[in-house]
Image (cartoon, rainbow, N blue to C red; front, side, top):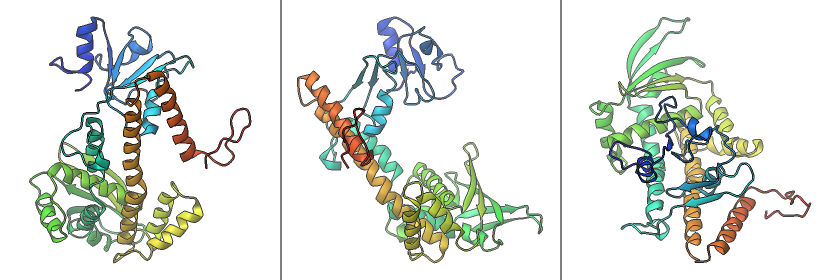
Length: 360
């Protein structure tokens, strides 16, 4: 069920029919569209806004009295951010989650198959299809992908050539040189036809065309993190990626990996992790960096994302476990407090009155 649609099935269109008054809508794009403009709501001309999660980014309306989530958020952090759109004037506000404990068949993750959980599980599995499959697809891109490369460097003649794999092109460059690559990913392109045959060699499951596009995007982002790709654009009409690929001096890709890891670790820890990456499996610096980065993402990021979905599901189950809603509401507030305190507090954390209140 969407925000709005022509069949009167969207939330906003149904509410408009039932209530009989104008309702604002917002889906995060084309804000100048009269059907997708939050200004009436912000200016108090309408009292209800039906929107995607995009509403609230950069919008500070102080007198929102309640929020209603049609399904639970992907994490307690996301829920607090979404619920925080209400009560910014520090007056009483209510945050509601419309939660169903109906279990779909085949629910297996933590023995949970509720409708809400299945939605997040679907997006999670699309984002993290498996590190071995991701590594296999990146290896295919580096060594076998059909690409067209063009260079216009002033210090030698420009050229346009077809290559098998990014690495074959990189080998022709001097350190700090770059080249523009064109990658065709249309459904009838040889790359898509060949990728499943390639996955068979490594006993990896086949992927659909849509997943193939997502896999390419993900791989391009990974390569961007280590500096192999410095810039990229996607032409959705022509089904093409345009990439700027850089050949860095020895150690350059490890330096970019350390910079990426510094988002999650202090400098000493990041440097130590890069030392481990240098002994990682791979024929060259690029393969070692990409392999290590993929392992890091699945160990540190994917697992935490998965746990956050489970934490949010538990939060909702607690919410429906007691008929005394007022007592349950106080317990849920404690749940969120201890959740954030235990994850983010420091040993110096104190209450406004000066009491030691850290859970580290």
